[in-house]
Image: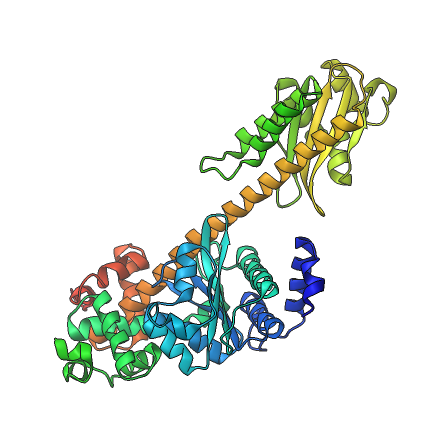
Length: 258
Length: 241
């Protein structure tokens, strides 16, 4: 990236440049339309800024959200960790509608104890979350994951915001939700992992005769305690490995309390 | 031409569209009013294009301007349409000197007491979204300074409208996403709860829910919400209940 050149550009020139960067990278052959385009945004951000990974979340609320696209499978795991931990920079960026820049993830341990330690296991040292928004309305977040604990430079910030703008335009222009209120098929498929977690949540509610919210808390606690992801826990619930008996056997801190 | 201080007020007012109760129609009427004030013209009107490129009358400072705008749209002829199509200002100091350029429009305009027309494109970069048109009762050219000021007004109004369209689009997307994501979540939760409660697969659970929703004539999402109210909720779907 040539910083002297790009900082002299007008906003319009920079926008065109960002779009040309997005056009210049391929998406997985299995993806089409909206999700393929969003993946190209993630990959262009990774290539341009020398990142470890990038992911686009779509969000309505923190529980009604999902990963719409990612640069690669590892980035998806890191993005999903925020759902496992129920915390993280993407949540804050969505709520406050401002970029959340965390150049030293290690130092953010007090702020997000769960997310920061889990993300560091994946080799992430810095996270930069840019809200996808128009005016006062936000509907997602672009997460950038770096393996070096250092801030984005001025150009990096401009590019980060530029890739977030590109993702925003895609979601606004694309057929994200059709006239019948159905999500784009690719988007729906991308959110399938989250669907499993919610199915398992309903199962745990019945198994333990608790509320839905409690069920999700128990699953989260379980994931933490056993050093797995929420999706792993969900898979065990759905497969019938984690049933009422297993939950109450007291092998998690949450479980031992009840 | 209006004074510099008044001009500053007008521009600040036009730029200030990020208010909660922004109303496009009201805004465009205000812009038309400003255009007449700036030029001392008799009337002004605005046209905007829809997504398919069709032009629509949007606002005018008075009835005569409104009729002239509508006339051009209906007859597909006139300076404002040429301005919109070309994306460049079209200015006619005296309509009587060019009777054959837009014959029916000119006849109509002269009959309603309009002698001069100055049409300005509402344009942002390559995108022309409409036109701002100033009608004068006297034959009179606009001096370059007036033309610059009116074009600046049209540019500001354009930005405001595009901004408003984007915000509207974003609000719609947020609403749709909220509904799609939320209903998806609750349906998955209900599938899981039913599967466990009734000892069926999640696919069978979904079929049971759909069947029940159809029989009871309620929405799938509403039914799912009821199912997940409590651990006993799935009993609703027990056969025979």
